[in-house]
Length: 413
Image 1 (cartoon, rainbow, N blue to C red):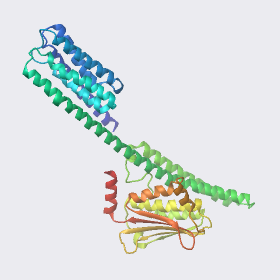
Image 2 (image 1 turned 90 degrees about the horizontal axis):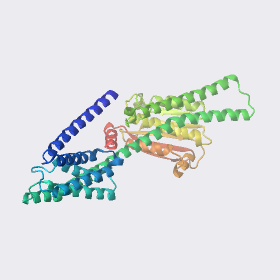
Image 3 (image 1 turned 90 degrees about the vertical axis):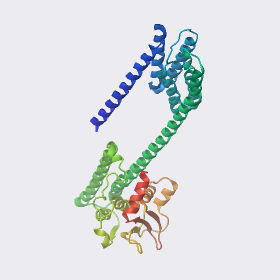
Image 4 (image 1 turned 30 degrees about the vertical axis):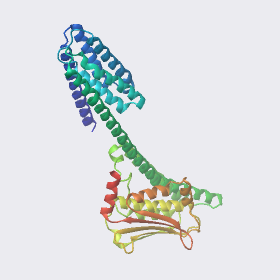
């Protein structure tokens, strides 16, 4: 990729250099059309200055443009006073460069500065034909065409290019914002889940020690092994995210989230997820509909199911109280064979979930990111207290491949 980029860079600069040399040659030939050597040299200098002005760096453009327009005007006024002037061309390359100055000024400069530069370059372009030896009706027609047609046209071109740049920058910012949101969701989904497990296990160990219970070496080894495993998983997730951020091809792939653990293995990872949760928390039971056990799913759907379950279990671990059992149910939606239901229910104490309250106040991002992910595959998610106590998270996702692909296509468009 780097060698290909360098090749394109060299080819572009070579092409630009050849065009620049050809234009300079034309400026020299037009200068030789002058009747005197001094006039020829002045015409060449003015033409080269005007030709170089559109290509100077952004910070120097205004000064160079004003200087080139001023030199062109001074030369035109001086030649107009002489009895001998060029018989054929006043400097058409210089005229084109002056018009390009107006276009670049409108495209790149603030409005007030652009207005001043357009006025200066347009004046120099309009009076440029006065360098010709024969002043007749054709000369007046040429000046009229430049003033009425050429100058407004180049200004309109500059406005169109300015609008195009604005729209392109907004599109790039939208892509960057989408990537930032995707990375924020991935960071929360992976790292927060593993770090929460570490914090919970460490709290359990401290609570046991504070209560005066003697822990056997086997129990200590088991708890430390669980903390070590969660830490290793968090490090692995961070490495996957760093790799994604450093690899532009991976970072731009929005259809396959960073560090996707479920995309290639369907729903099989859910069993390991619930078993891991049960080791340091209340018992979690996975109920997976038989027709879904071996059914291939789109990567985005399988990953979203995994995230819904993962985030729900993390919130139970962090916020719920009095929970003895969590039920994770994955099934086909009743009456809709192309709809997938993901339900995570706990039997904790009734009332509003602290996680939901935090999200409503804007300090929690887990449920917000989860809702964005579910909506991104044309699904919907609800959460709230259930009758009899506890909390329920319910996500409805499409199993229809067409619906998901159309949603992803609309996001890219």
